[in-house]
Length: 618
Ligand SMILES: *[C@@H]1O[C@H](CO)[C@@H](O)[C@H](O)[C@H]1NC(C)=O
Ligand SMILES: *[C@@H]1O[C@H](CO)[C@@H](O)[C@H](O)[C@H]1NC(C)=O
Ligand SMILES: *[C@@H]1O[C@H](CO)[C@@H](O)[C@H](O)[C@H]1NC(C)=O
Ligand SMILES: *[C@@H]1O[C@H](CO)[C@@H](O)[C@H](O)[C@H]1NC(C)=O
Image (cartoon, rainbow, N blue to C red; front, side, top):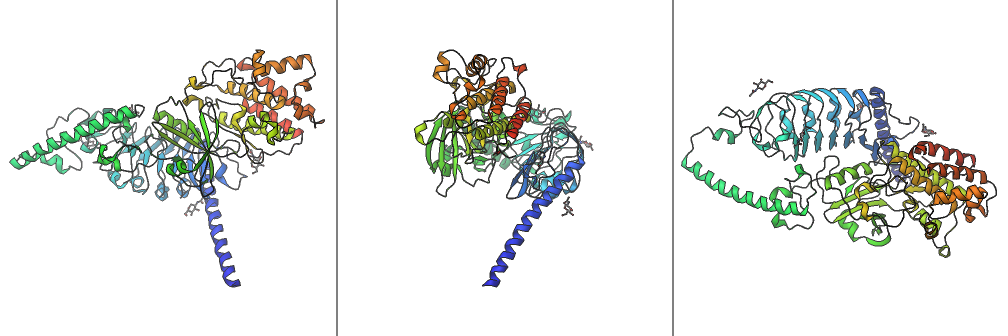
């Protein structure tokens, strides 16, 4: 008995140690990459023992599965022993950098790689044929690089491939016959010659343009009668033979059948168009079965299961996951889970969904989505790639014509708004200074993180009902980045006490307008007054102006929430410092407001000097 137990422990130990050593090897490989590529440094914290929190890195089950560093200003060439050693990598996105050299030969080790996005770099050399023998490759974008030589003949080895973008390179020779069912294809602006293979003639002209020696449908017909196809297909040969009566009969029958099929397809397409007028053009042809459409109305190819897509915009009929660590479930499961209404917000209603096996998630049902599907998916992809300790994790989303769902992690303490202004009779505990300062800091860090993504990225809807709290009262910011996809008319008509004065369109919120809203939030935290409060609005003043008038006429401490000052004699000075930060954020003119980074730094100083046990960690 004792023996078997120790064996068990030994096995467990072995298991654990291999897991950690694999992650350790992933970490080493990432460092190899970091040390080889130059340019704007990768701000990875080398004292972290796990690479999983590094910018652009995502792990699942203790292995690196995604590396995304788009537009990060990287240059130099990729080393051997870097990406090739990330053997659990599923998505690699290095698009729009300035990387050069050839694709390292050890990319052949990436056996679970699904998505390869290298477009917009300066890679050169031939496109390695081993890319097409990667067993799981689905999407490959090598466009806008300096690849030379021929398109490898073994494209058809990539049986799952649906996207192949090779435009804007210097590829020569002819296009091989491609029999895998590609849904997206582009070889425009290369130096390809010969004729377009029949299997690709369905793609639009623009997929082939810019190759002056290329001919055949959808481009101009080839001048030679004999079509020189590289792997001359039997169909091509038949044309040269004299036609027998049987063949003619066959052709006639074929034509009739073809015509009927075409008609059927047209009818389907028309119906489809009506249903989904937002679908991107190049995704229309491969119709994907919507959950409700009857099987009879759908052409056969559509039975192909399309995997959920990330960067290229193909449609999925189930949930698309960004994070799997919360547990696996599908749309059906989600719809069957017991649901409880949490509230109605500006973007839609929220529900708490509890699964039988114990998992609880929050589901947001979006209303009035105004952007087309492609843009919606692109935007969601960006939101899904965000990851910060003070952001509510977006677990998955679902898009269909009449249902748009976002699945978030569930926050048991509800919103800051409810905690500040909720009914005192309901066992609501007053928030003390430490907690409020911690919430301000956590929210500041999350917004700062959002702003750091790109100078045009903003939260767009900062208010206390969008600041959720974890069990330990850690602030988690939600509803980030949704404003641009929601119709602005769906916003409530009443005066929005958080909106910066310069904002005219709720869908276009600048970072400085975010700072303003954040300032209002700080004032709300300190005064305990809701910016949308009836009384304030009736007086025609907003919260910043109210605070301003009180601090000018009376002592500053008169503005504070009585709940905050009742038990607090010391720390008052820090409250005033935080109040000043809030007021500077709500400056009338955007230029006068500090940046979110600056605000975060100031709040850090306040909360450190007040010695508050800081509940928020990075
Ligand atoms: C990459 O993998 C190879 C072969 O497994 C190994 O020899 C090498 O040390 C690894 N490189 C790093 C940086 O871990
Ligand atoms: C790096 O991480 C360590 C702890 O893991 C932390 O003490 C340090 O402040 C971090 N450095 C930066 C620049 O974030
Ligand atoms: C296409 O170009 C290659 C050289 O890049 C040449 O060898 C070949 O003969 C050309 N084929 C046609 C059909 O023009
Ligand atoms: C192919 O790429 C070119 C250049 O980027 C673009 O203009 C064209 O619209 C693309 N066509 C298709 C079908 O993707």
